[in-house]
Image (cartoon, rainbow, N blue to C red; front, top):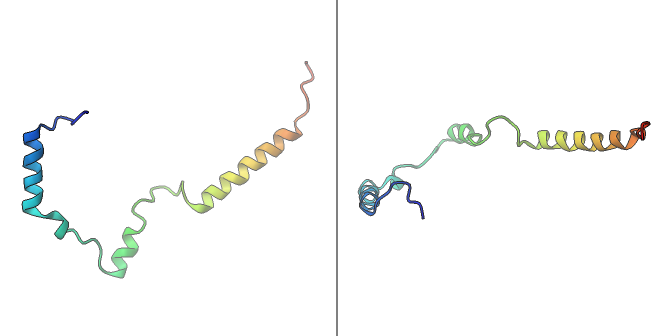
Length: 77
């Protein structure tokens, strides 16, 4: 198993720092409605996974299949 350079001593020191600092008690995230509205889109980077974009891709794929079904047979065969 690759520990990515973490020796047992380094891992123990990091665990102790985490226990001493208790960061999970300090990080509460947004508490106001305005703050929550801002962060709810943090994972959305470019809209490539939006419902509208997925619907467009589905329509384009269906159109491509339909166009291929209309293609004339190869005249050189």
